[in-house]
Length: 91
Image 1 (cartoon, rainbow, N blue to C red):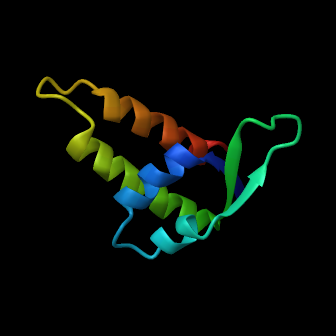
Image 2 (cartoon, rainbow, N blue to C red; image 1 turned 60 degrees about the vertical axis):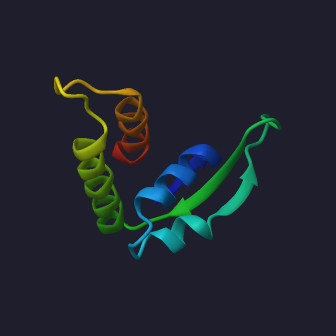
């Protein structure tokens, strides 16, 4: 499956997956312009369903550890992670 992910989100994903097999997948993502939108650059990342599940699990674990405040509510990082996880959760 191909996913189009913006630079900022790819950077976040790389930092979270920094010691995993997936870091290189995202670092080596092909940069491409989306037709009709010359101001936004997206990376194309191709993942199998199994890889998608592993990425979602890793991002979700990170969200639980770092994306909530002391009251269990999402902080700004948590909202961002929730958005990034949503990219991979589309079926």
